Image (cartoon, rainbow, N blue to C red):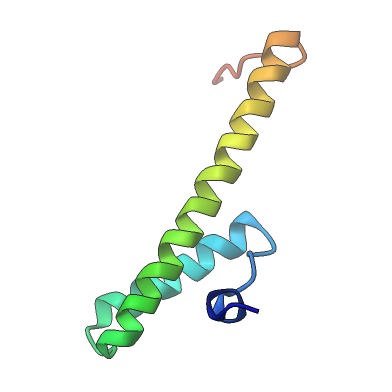
Amino acid sequence: MSRKAASSPAQPASYGEAVQQLEQLIAGLESGQLPLEELLGHYQRGTELLRYCRDRLQAVEDQVRVLDERGDVKPWMPE
């Protein structure tokens, strides 16, 4: 097993979990208290989580677009 695969954290269980992890990573990065090695690890994990969130948002947007094209979704009208 490669070293990267062994040390890579698992995918988040949900979009909400990914956002929560990102918020924690950002707090750690902004604290200024992390050693350089941990800063790099936090940054790398943050980019993975951001990519996951973007992919999930794109998938939902694509689903909404398909539903909209089929006419199953009505436009939202504020009251």
